[in-house]
Image (cartoon, rainbow, N blue to C red; front, side, top):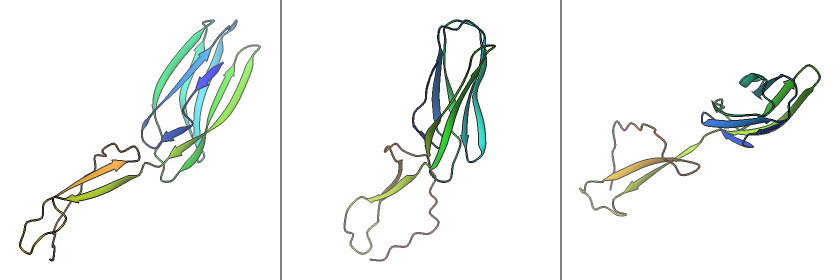
Length: 140
């Protein structure tokens, strides 16, 4: 058997796991479970009857509030064959940075300040966050 999953996952993002079973001569019940902080999430559970089987699935990575080490547990069982393996995966908390940029470096008293705000994640991809500004007062 072969199971692939990234060693690092990002909280709340979409992850992908693939499983391949080859040269089977009996029916195998396979289960892939992602565990973290005593929470078990079953990613795949299936009876495989084909001698060669391959499947990839997408799943929602659990949301974590801090960096967490979890495990992917692979369990397979048939009439005469059984296997189980656990591998660690790191689940990153998604953090973003917010940048505020003005249209010029120095303003004179009374000038209008124009600015833009952008929030980026750790891969510099725009994050859809709303920023509310009730009262802005700048003093020059």
